[in-house]
Image (spheres, rainbow, N blue to C red):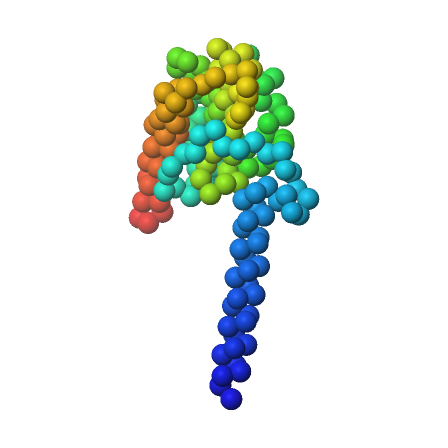
Amino acid sequence: MKKPLIYFFLYIGIFWGIVLLLYYCMRWYGNEFAGGDIKRNPCIIEIETNLKQSIIKQFSDSLVAKNIIKKIPDKWDYLTENIGNQHLDLKVYYFDENPEEMYVVEFRYMVPCINMIYNEKLKDWWIYNDENIDINHKELFRMKKRFTEKIIIPITNLSNAHSSQKIK
């Protein structure tokens, strides 16, 4: 009498495992099977971090408020006016040091992902697989290091300080 009950739960577990696998596959590949946006940009640079993406998004505005990073200047406002409206999972980060740049980071992947880069040399947004622009591995490493040092590490420090204040 107990064996049919075990098989029942086994089948239920397998069913939900397949459903979850399909769900995450569709999210990862841009909902192509569900009629979603198939023309999403792949990742230019993956940012490796232990921080949850919700923490990064939550504390990003604090970096500007605390003057750790600068606000996007007026001269570049026109470049970003549609980006934030397109999807809630996109965030634009501005860096004022040489070279002056902006990165569009997407938070829909398993890790934060830089999808678009703009700087004065490029004169336009650089998107993955753009044949007109060639960025070497050294530049990509510099950008990844810059994002980690200027965004991820300060957010880690802010979130640690915030959580320790909550405990007290």
